[in-house]
Length: 147
Image (tube, rainbow, N blue to C red; front, side):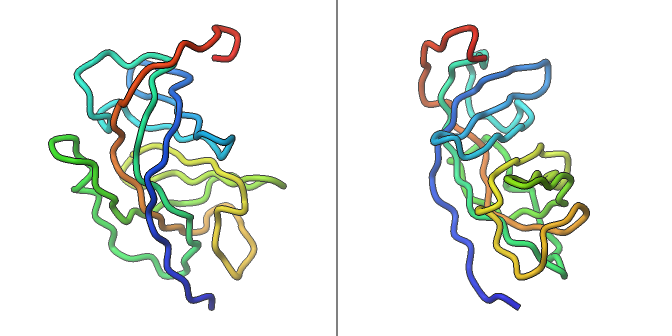
């Protein structure tokens, strides 16, 4: 079994799509896509495509025996704080894999190199990673055709 620690780092992304209840954020550097409920964004502004987000995220560890994770700190009434969360891998392809985050907190789709595992990636596997709520930190003008 691999023995390593996953550590959260502050990352950024750009909102590309907004629906009634969710936003889709493309990570800077073409590192993946995160979809989360709007309630995880710290802002009073109406969220729109082009908004810049800042949040904590880590590599993803595939685990055979998941913890009893607690998402109660995923609230926007204080500074964003990394929280160890669990999830299930729902899609795997040649280049990436997607995790459904516990408690209906959204999805994370990132390249396979973001996954730490000594077993093959497969749908249904348990995963854990650090994640936080998101801060809206700015706005970019983005061409309509890139949305």
